[in-house]
Image (cartoon, rainbow, N blue to C red; front, side, top):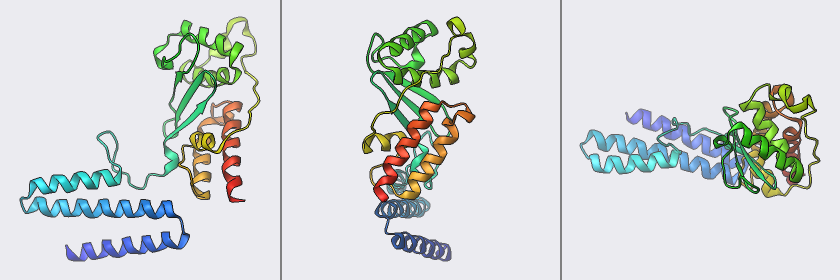
Length: 231
C-alpha cells in the first residue's frame, strides 16, 4: 500500500512539474484540485477501513467535490473545459448545444413566448415563434432552424410553400465574453483549450455534419476573437 501511495505521489509531482513548465496558471489550479481530491479520497478509504465512517464520509465528500463528481456524472477528473455547453444568443433566442451528445435546447428571451423552453413548445407554437424571429430577429430564426433540424428531421422539405428555409444572416461584432460562451470556455483559456473546444464543437455544427452555416460561422468567429488575444 505504501509503495502504491509513493508511486501515486511521484506521478502527481511529475505531472505538476510539467504543468508548471507550461506556465498555465489555470492548468496548475486544476491539477492541484485534482491531486487534493485524490488524496482526500485515499484518506477517506483508510479512515473507512479503520471504522471512522464519519470522517471518511466527510473527506470523501471533499474529494468528490474537488474532482467535480456529481450524482449524475461518472468520475472523470480529466474532462476538458470544452466539453460542456455552447451558448448562442440573439435578441429573442438563447440556444445551448451539448458538445458530447449534440443535443440542442433553448429558451425564448423575448416576444410572445418569452420565458418558455423550446422543448416545451409544440409545432404550431414553434412555427409562430419562427415567424416572429423572421420578422424581428433573423439570427434567432437561424438558431431555430438548427434546432428544427435536430428535433424535426426533414422539416425543410415540408415547409410551407417549399420555399428556401435557409435564413441568411450576417454575423456582427462579437465580444470576448460572448466568444467564451460560444466555445464554453472560461476567461483566460489557453491556446490548446480554445483549439480543442473549437474542434469538438465544429464536429457537431459543421454543415456537413447536420449543422448550419450560420452556427458554424459563429463558432469560427468566436475562435478568431479568442485567438487574437495570443497574437
